[in-house]
Each structure stands twice: as C-alpha cells, then as structure tokens.
Length: 397
Ligand code: SAH
Image (tube, rainbow, N blue to C red):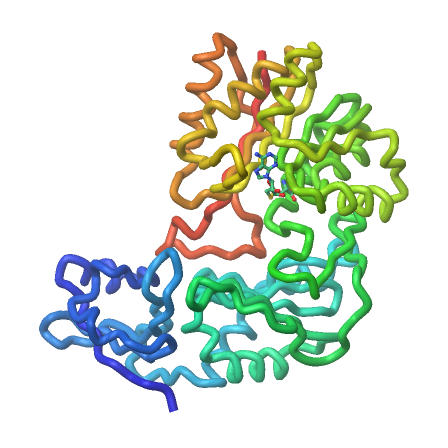
C-alpha cells in the first residue's frame, strides 16, 4: 500500500491548481515538513480544507511532485495508468501507421497527464524514462499497464533521477526481447542506429524531427554546413542527404566521432567526404576565423548547461556570444538554425537574444521560420513551460 498525506496548498497558489496547473512547487505547499517518502500519494486541499486534487511526491529539479487528477474519487492504480497510456497511444495513431518514421514519443509526461514519466517507441521497442524516485515507486503498475495496452518486442527503462547524488546504473532491460543493438529506426525515411542498452542516451533526440526534415528538404542543398554540438551528427546526416556540399560536425565528446561515422554509414553516405571534429566549439570558431573559413548554414544546438575542464556554458549567460561567433563566420545569405531546449527561457526571450546578437555584430537578418515541440511531444495549456524546445531559422542578410 502506498503512503498517503494531506497537503495544504497556500491560498496564493490555490487558483493556479484550480485551473489545472500540474506541477507542485515548494512555495505552494504549507506543510512541506509532512513530505517524507517519495511516491507518497498527496491529497491537496486549500487552507479551508476544500479538495483541489490528487498527486504524488517526487523530487525533480523542476519541483516537488505532480498533480495526477482533480477528481476526488479517482484512484491512482494500474487502471488509472492504463487509461492514461491508452489515451496517449490513441493520440499517436498516425505515428504508429507510418512506415517512414519508426521512432517517436508515445507518452510525454504532464502533457499526457503524468509528470515525470515519458515513454518512447523505437521500432517495436519501448523505453520508459523515470524522472523521479517518486514516479519510479509506481513502476509495477505502470509497466503492467503498458504491457496490457501495447504489443512489443521489448521494454527498456532509464532512471533519470539520482539517489544520494548518484545515478543508479542497473541493467536497463525490463522485459521481452533484449534486441541486438544498434537497432536501425527510420525517421522520414532516414536510418538511425539506436542503442537502448547504453545508459541514459540512446543516440538520437526525437524532438528535433521536424527541424531535421526542414533542414534536409528546404535549406541544405548546395550549402556548406557547420553543425556545432553535433553529438551523433543527426543534423549533419540530414543536411548531407539534402544535398549539402559538405558538412562539418563539431563536438567535444570523444564518443561523437565513432557515433557520427556510424550514422553516416547506416545511410550509405561517405563520411570521409565530411569533417568530424572532436573539439570545443568555441575553439573551433577561433580556428575557423583564423583560417578564414565561412559557412552558409550554421546549426547551433548546445546543451542548456555544460561544464568542461576550462569553462562552463549556460544558455542564459552565453547564447548571445555563441550566436555572435556563429554570425562572424556565416556567409551573406547564410542560414543560422538556432536551437535551445532550456525551459527557463521562452521563445520571445530567445528571439531577443538573436536580435541582440545580430545588432551587436552590426548585421541584419530575416526570420524565416520557428519550431517548438512536435505533435508526439504533447504539451498542455496548463503548463506552457513544458514546451521547452525553441528553434529559429534565420537568414543573414
Ligand atoms: N545537436 C545534437 C544534440 C546536442 S547534445 C543532436 O542533434 O543530436 C549536446 C552536445 O554538446 C553533447 O554531445 C556534448 O558533448 C556537446 N558539448 C557540450 N559542450 C561542448 C563544447 N564546449 N564544445 C563542443 N561540444 C560540446
């Protein structure tokens, strides 16, 4: 049996939860001291004792837990999870039907009604990600619910939370076939090698699907492309397939070299015709400037925060400078694809950075198009910050 606690919501926040806001903030809880064990079911009331909702205690960098229902009689059990997962799957019917794209998000946390839980689909395999110890305490019911609503080759899981500051590394395998990795999935007809058994990352960020397609279909042709923070080179592969004259991928991590070669190879592209550099992006900019290199397409997709031996990077502090460096080596009429998944900044503020970077560089630009999360990454109107992705295509004039 799960622990249960009554939680009193501070009157200042009452209306927020009444209108469906799902995240439990520390400041909103009057009796914080009562929260002891993650996974405890919380019954929320206002200061007068009137019912507001039912949720659970789960610590994430975002908050203290999530509201699951505003129906007082609704039980949080296997049937509850089954209803949520079934509904989520119904919403992805068109994705399941596609033969062109075989990797997508099936369940997107609070956007599908359960904060801290995501489920991704990779050609018959499912990967469950748990973002707090709290949601992980429901694992038996959630896995049982998933098994009842889908047919699967295998199920894997990723624990994206830490206990005592340490990430628990266990076998990620849950049930079914173990699969032989990499498995090759498709995205808009392009092959991608994914590993479900290699820790937190599978090698592929599903949320950039529409951006990759746009790069391939509308912008890459005839362009010389620089892909910074390239990871496994997904943007480079799409650019190359779209007819880029050459791509250069730059990432600090040693593993990025072999992984990028692999992604080119599974698409029968000659990786030797492209450059793959294991290098700090900011060093690369200096090098490119010194050599007088310039590019007519520039992709910027840094992590929200990064720490290397010599420096730290944070989107909030450094994105404008990153843009200025990029603008400096982008040719006239070149395209800059500026992306961030930092949830602490909205689209307007992000566009403000872009504007400031061009102004300070003494250059003009034209805004071409912008992207947020794709349809399978469902978000809810009651939690706008859940739509964390911001991608802007601009043309240097
Ligand atoms: N654009 C990628 C995802 C980027 S993930 C894609 O589409 O798949 C962020 C990457 O930035 C990581 O691979 C990390 O190794 C790299 N990185 C972080 N700091 C860096 C730096 N200063 N220079 C180069 N790469 C960096």
